[in-house]
Length: 433
Ligand code: URA
Image 1 (cartoon, helix red, strand yellow):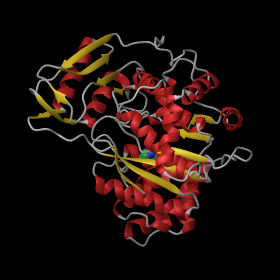
Image 2 (image 1 turned 30 degrees about the vertical axis):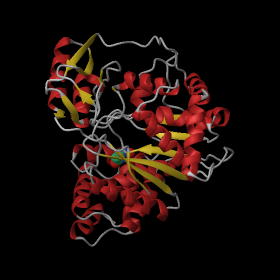
Image 3 (image 1 turned 135 degrees about the vertical axis):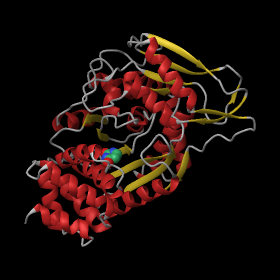
Image 4 (image 1 turned 90 degrees about the vertical axis):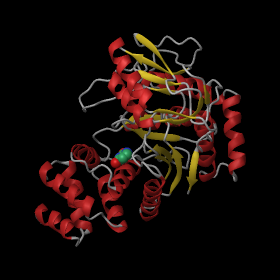
């Protein structure tokens, strides 16, 4: 079979057979299909999307292109948590130790930042010494010892996704829902998960800009999960404004540490909601209300913090990020940005503008080869619905230079709006399915 006919079948709307999609996955993983042919297929797919059956075939085929983690011996259920990515989304850093302190065992594969959305790998690697690349044996041993382990994606797990993702990024074909579904779920399958708890971000700071597209993605993830025998439980959550106060790699680790020490804000509430949802689907409790009280207790009684300390030590962190006075590096410049829009109620803190400002400061990558500045970022002092005075501080920019700080401030002011009328805070969770 030549790959040209696989492309032609996709383009004509005839669709692809199981065998054709297996060939595609293998050829992407071992690079036996050239990038230009894969790119042509990806573009054809955007116009003639994979149907549900084809999406499931491709997902399994991609998962099988590398090793599949065998978690036998670890307590069940083998659960993975995933977010489609957003601005200020450091949920994993709180949720993993929180869930482990409630008795769950979690082995998680994480990714790097994509575009304006930060990645857990970059956040944790910004802590001196933190090792993000564990071997399958190390992952299992650590999870057996302390209940949690995390690793960046290696070239051994779902390598087809690595090739296809890079091509999608370069060919404007990232947004296709079947391609997002197969990309996410193939990695979860390869990571040995039996079930997945997924946070689909909805709004300007995520991949899905509106509720309709987020719901479509959520339903597609859920349907494919059913077809491949890996149940997927989904919360669609708000991403119009940054999540919590901090955006930027080390700043986000610091905010996560603050939450684990007992700090509460909107971000804490989301972590606790997602933890409760996970405890219910993992059958650790039988109602969301009970899940909420278990999760709050683990935070308030310091059990989640203790677990987080064990986790960071196990993965090599050389600095205690959980102390009140941590010894983490700081950016050279701190610039306070004041409200230019007059007294009133905050009606917009555009997550996209904040994410783009952080990337521009060096906190994310404009091209794949960019080196991240772990100290760069933005503190968001106001959220939608808050009252604000004229000239009151609304952001603090953490930058490597005055020049970059001023540019970021300009971008941040543009994405900030104030209304004279009271504005309702945005809901945290839009739908759970
Ligand atoms: N996250 C992934 O892993 N893949 C996608 O395609 C989008 C988000």
